[in-house]
Image (cartoon, helix red, strand yellow):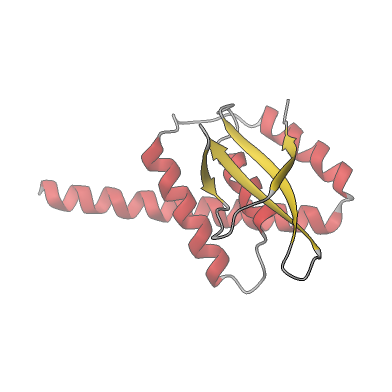
Length: 144
């Protein structure tokens, strides 16, 4: 009976994560399309401040959310760029100030400008890691 309970709890946690992140990703994607970026940033920052966090965030729940974002971005019929992924995770972790949303730049192999967004926690990239990660941090997104 305990095994069944654990499996049902895991299933519920993953279902919640996929549903939550689907709504957040779609909302961010639509808002970025509708609003100029400055307005979007202001609206996003307001939402982060106004919407309460209903449960404590821990590493296991955060890992489930990261997995949900990664699987959704691979299976949704529209592109979910790194900025949207980072914004979605930061929205989930909105009261956790030690999770930092960073934006960086580099020149790619064709000597063209490339930008990337990621979330860091204690120097470790939580979402947005890349094999040749040599982006120069340009901007730390502050929501306060």
